[in-house]
Image (cartoon, one colour):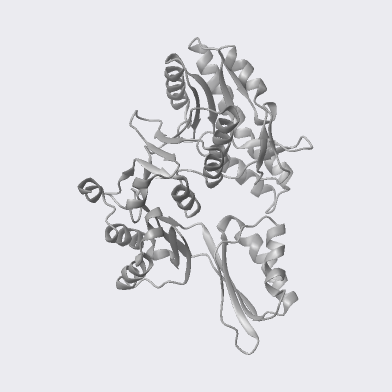
Length: 410
C-alpha cells in the first residue's frame, strides 16, 4: 500500500462531467490498495471570475477581504467531488485549508505555508476515507483565511505530500507532462521523461505554466517526487526528481518564455549609496517581486536603472516607483508592458561553454534585439520585444536540437 497525493487543476474539474472523470480516477487509485489524498483547484475560470468581481468593487481591494472572496472557488469543487465519490459508494470527506489546518504566514494573496497538521487527515485515512482538500488556501496565526497566490494549489499538494511523507505527488493537468517548450508554439516539442528540481525551478520561474515555482521549491526541500500527468489519459508523464548523472549529458533541456512581466526604467538617478534601497525597499514592502535588474555605468554622477516586475503588480509598482523617483530626484520614469522573457535551461550548461553566445547569435540572425540579460549556472534569460516571442522560441528550440525527432535520434 502506498500513500498517494493527487492534485487536479481547474481544467480537470472544469465541468460536472470532468469532476466525475476525476472521481473515477481517484477511485481507481484507491481500489489498487492505496491511501489517497486529493487536492483540487477551483473550476476553470472561477478564480478569474471572483478576482474580476473584486476589481469591479475597487481597483486595489483590501487583501484580507480579497482572500475571503477568491478562496470560495475551491470550496465548491471539494464538495462536488466528495459527493460524487460518495454516490459511487466510497467514503470521502472534504476539508477547507483552515479545517486541516494549513497554517500560513499573514501575507494575504501571496501567503507562504508554515506548517500542516496531519493528525486529522491520518485519522480519516486510517478509517478508510478518501480525503479531499481545498488547494490554494490556508489560515494565518490570527485565524484569517489566506490564499497562496495563483497556481497555489500545486504548492498545497506538494506541501501536503511532504507533511504526510507520501510516496508520490501526482499533479494532474491538461497536458501529459513537461515539454521542451510550449507545444502550441513548436509542433515538434518533445516530452521530457525526467527533469531535475533545479531545471524545473528555472522553467517554472521563467514562464513554464505546468508547475508553480513554490511547489517545486517544496518538493526539492523535502524530497517529494512529483509526477506531472494528464487527467485525460493514462500516459506516463514527467518525473520531477533529484538530479542524476544522465541529466548532465543534455546541454539544454528546454526553452521557456514569459509574457507576464513589465519593464520599468528610472532615468537620471543620482549615483550614490542608498539610492537603490530607496527605490526597491517600498516595492518589497508591497510584496512586489522584482526580477531582472540592470544599472548603467555612471556618467557625471548620474545613472539609469531598469528592472522587471510581474504584470499583475505593474500598475501598483509604477505608482510606488513614481513616488520613490520624485523623492530621490530622478529625472524620469518610463515603462513598457510589451516585453517578453525568453530563457534556455539545462543542468548541462554548468560544464559546457558557448551556450549563451549561441543563443545571442541565433537571436541576432533573426533580427531580435536583446534588451536585458540575466544568467545563472543553468539558465540564460533575455528580455525582448513581445512581438518576437514565438519566433525566438522556435529558432532557439531548433538551434539546440530539442525537437522530438532530435531527442529520438539521441
